Length: 507
Image (cartoon, rainbow, N blue to C red; front, side, top):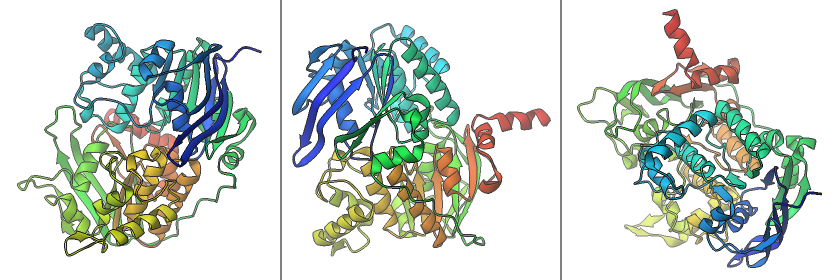
């Protein structure tokens, strides 16, 4: 047998009373794509940080190409030939794309710009190398992370949820790239909650549950249901069907909205029209960077329309174009942003304090002072209902895994009992069990009469959830398509502008 490129023996890591990894053994073969599977909080991301030198293990050994290795930093890991793309990005927002790349990749700026463009074309990861990172969407930042890592020429590439914000067309292209890298001698550690992707791209899978290894299999020999059962220890529930309903009251209406941002790197919006009624879920599909962030900010109230604007945004029958976020929430609006850390939660604050950010009107304050007992009770209820894996309500938000933080934020907003719920990327980075639970809950709320708007780059998710789908492409929104009468391939054509090109040709 070929000696492993990377070998872990008895790796353990604890944070206080939380045991993230317990006696983990792992072998990664040369020229392999090896999956790490597990629920949120199973210890996957912690294990990857130990391999990449972000953290050091409490016990156990790491061997690299047969030699015992002790990594004190990611820089040392990169020098050894280990690269990593994090689920939560590690980019400086005030710098441009190429300036972020210059921090870890040597070379003249002009040469690096050319390499960024070439990699973008080759791998379907197009991004403007001169754009400021703060102006990029989550999906575009993901592309920057992947490109930057590939530019270090790693022997082992660690990818934590690399496809979570990529459209189907780009996923296929990325997989072609990963296979080329594998065939060229690069081993890949691949974390994904999309089990069909694991079966398509990986030749080995190690399964973690509660920080321990519970299985080591060839994923190609098992179907997605088998893998899910190994991960969560139980069978997955069937999706909840949407109940037939007649159209309810309009809870959100936008008619012919035009918006040109001040930021030259932002996407202008043109003639945006959509309607979300009570008892409906409207989904918005599209490749990241086509105006999702700008549209989200206008709907959430983070961006307001100027008073002299003739465009209108209506919520619960009121013109809210000039209203701020708090005023819209008072009407019965709730919002789950795509960016968990920074917009959805404050990482340095406890979960109790993060509950207060949006749930304070639910009796969590009295006479202007925080009612800590009620705030703690609300937070504990959210943790229990949405299976948030955390030591308790006083844990810092930033200490949670990405999926557990997402469950907390989604749960917090649903517990507000809004009339209109807007969720951007509802299950990004969430394991299959938690994703199923979130989707079932959204459908149940829809069946109870709530109006729900979902922006997602996962077509499977939109087809499971939505009554209607519209596609955002270069700042313009398609007409609504009835989900049950539409195929994913048709949505994909809208996402790459093929329908627009065909329409112009006919005209």
